[in-house]
Length: 183
Image 1: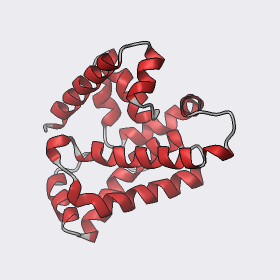
Image 2: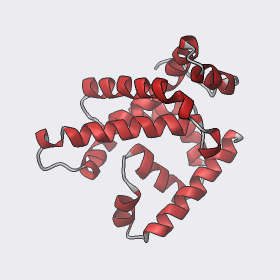
Image 3: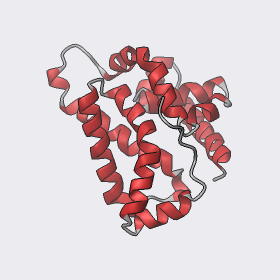
Image 4: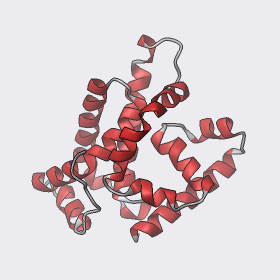
């Protein structure tokens, strides 16, 4: 098992340094967050080598777009997670023609066999523990949207709930996570 990584006490100053183009800050952020981000990417991209490439592409985007991060819209980890998740989904969809008869939902379900490995990676920064303190509905929407790559619409169809209900649950779950992180 790798070394544990915890929420960085000086994350805000690291983010500011990253936004100012500091390569050392980027290196610290990469070192501390890449295992958890890779866990998410590898849920969508099952080929580990391709997932590593997607991880690298995601961090290039994070580096290039750091100045666009806005703390009023969410946590830095969520912002990075969304970049990585979208990059992975884009990669999957781009290469979808090569993978016949598999859709993103099925791919996510197949990857559930890898849960224990990914849970270890997610726990590197304590996200899973925080999510597990929420309600069943909060855990469910976070799991489907962020760890399995579902869209709001896909989740609405999967759970048989109105899209507005899904969006309300997402807002509530993210609000709880934001409170847990002190933002």
